[in-house]
Image (spheres, each protein chain N blue to C red):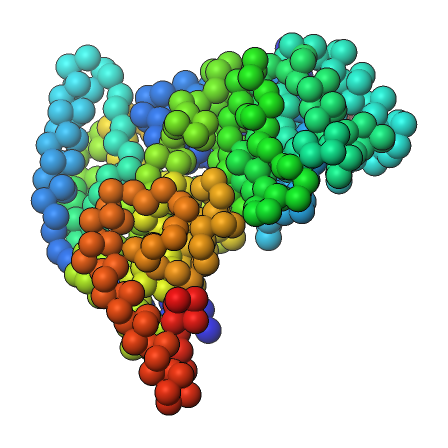
Length: 362
Length: 134
């Protein structure tokens, strides 16, 4: 066994990934993470030498969509190859072991890598009625989290459920669901929110931790600033239409066909911080707005209770924090939208005309 | 029907005024390369360049003598510009989507030289092949 054995580059080489491919990937990842190109080179060097980290992955109240997002792709990508290179010592969905053997694997990995392993959590934690609504091997999610976090170097809360409570926390929150950061106070917690999150964000956090031994810079909600530093609206290719006041009124009108802004159809882009508009989905193919549907705001806290996916942000009763940009336009557009909605509803009632979704929600 | 067939018309506008600033930064980096031997790089992905800006920049930089095509997890192209030491580097993923783009100001772009570790393991493989011959 030579001195390179156990390093990430060594592991990738064994999988047929050349150093140049790895360097190219690092250059792209560093660019996405807004690292200066010079730092990007150091990033590639450090990452190549990094040893495989032990990762313990706990799944609580979740739908497994986050795991699907991170592990599935149409072709093998470097995200998946790097993901394969970590020592994933415990993951309900992916591991072969079950029952007592699975729990023994978690305990063994904790003992062997005490103080060094990364704890990844997807799903929220039910607190009501003693946490009985979600248990694993007879242990409540709360107790398993608090036991496993003791020896972790850091915690990554993957997906909006783990980051902010997500769907399980939606009103009336029958299980008393809480976010991971509500419970873990003595370890660094990174929130990789999204329903599901963009795979490269997870890889970026992991790569940063491996290369620099630290977590990337975070925003006020604990999300990596490089990926959540701007709103969808800031980087949306339909933004020029917003600036020109050109809005689609229904999903099939002339404005929609012309690719006008989806603000009035409920797009939450102006208050949603994520990088869908730049990184995109499905191996860089597109993102929801490019497919003609507004942003749901899935990387923001309480997006599920934001008053309706097709309700324009400028309308009242919107629990999501409305950013300054949206407030500005709200003053102008909001009145118009509200009036249009009201008028549309009346007109639809009177003449049995097709009403927009916004009409229906008003 | 492909994504390109969806009739969304973008009014992307013309030159934004950003491209000449990039040209000046290239000149600055080139000066550092000649004076101190320091390589530099500009990440085009992070700059608010319109397609017109990009075309203008490409026109200004022109083409040099070398063009390198790499097939490394998707296509990559390293093109020397008309200014020796200034390279346009573009990376695509396996689906042909552009993932990153840089202007590198250096004698040889990072991706081109073989890494010493790789040379060493290549030598080991070659020696093993030679010993198999006998």
